[in-house]
Length: 441
Image (cartoon, rainbow, N blue to C red):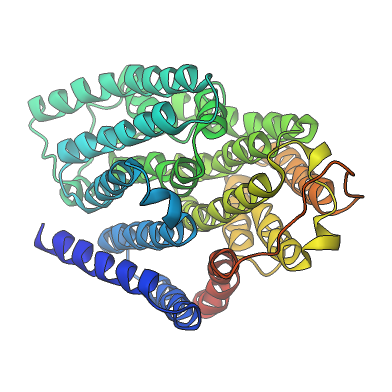
């Protein structure tokens, strides 16, 4: 707990310094922090030891990305955050996320795991865009409630079996008591709803569309990663069986179908929301495959998608602020007016579908190889998923950057210094991290 408090104090100091310094110093600070972030991630892969010994490092990586995205959110939305009462809700969410990634007990992890939903619920209800935000908040509340409550009773049963709740000690325990379809289903579904997996994904697009930009960035960048983090933590309790194979098949095929849905959508935020579910399908297949390659690839995608999706939602907010609409039809021709934004937008969208020289590509290659080794037939679903993912990403770029401006469109202002710094800080890690990881493979 002392370490967590020290991290929070350091984070507050860094945030205040970044807000108060000039634009040039702010750029230097953000660049230096991104460089340190890459070195920290490289340290994780430099340790060629058993996966059990890297658990603490996994927590540190997720805490770091939480700090990183929080600083970028405050930098881009400081006028909105500090002028409304929402900043208290936002800081409470950040604190809950840090505590979730820092705990060592399964029960305390479950407590903070569910606590993170309260700020998001309030964020959607209080600062959502449309009256449908009440429906969206009810979706996220009931989906997570009915999936997570059985997990609480299962944790009590684990205590009754005489098994420790210390997450580190769980790694050396082999359970025969979990060789039950019901127990495996409860363990998996509580975290798969948070990803979410196909068939229980309806709450995510509604939450993204109705949430303000702060909620969307945190939801896509960090909160969706709680499901993967939770499954990795309880991985020793999951035994390969019929339920695991069903979830594996459902995630791959569902990801391909949702990729097709993204192609026919015309709302920028809806496309980005569904694309998060598509990419989480790969992470799910890697995490529940119970193989070391699957875990390593999933961790890479978790980090890469956290940065990439946050940057895309930031870009979508920049588009919305200038045109007042999220429709393709009203958002054409940015390449002619703001070419700098088009460059950042292109890098983020290329990284979104695992383009060349990006951190996402490294994780997707590992996960595809892992799935092929598990089941050669799974490669068909991966082909669909990868094709549609590239298709809707390129369509999103073409529909917003090319074409002619509408005569009724507002005058487009160039990117501000803050917006440019935030976009650069989202693009840096996606390109720099693979360079630091080349010597580990």
